Image 1 (cartoon, one colour):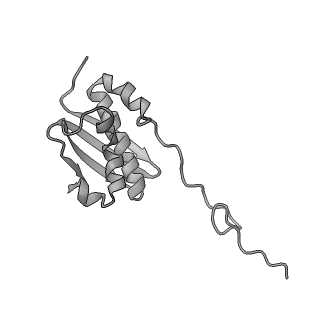
Image 2: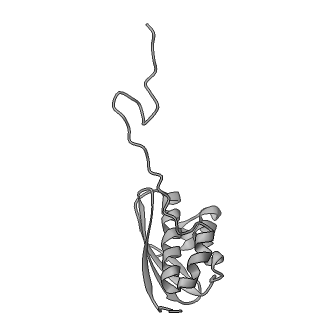
Length: 131
């Protein structure tokens, strides 16, 4: 059972990348120098971000500093969630089964499908005209 005082972890989702620094503290979450409430205005995204702490009963035990880049808000929230989960595993290995059970350590592999030539979008086609 090893406990580390400070740990780094990276999480990704779609095109978003989140780098997390976890330090024992009071549960303060700072994302790109803004509070969690300022950065993620939607309650659903905030609860999503805090899931790893709830799964391991570590709510309020760690301060998190995050640097997030790329993607939209949903992708960034997913990246932050993965980064926090990975950092918690690095902090203490006994968190791994708890996070694994909640599927919080799995990188979401879904990416945007590329646009094909001769089409409007990836799958949508231009309107067909018979004459």
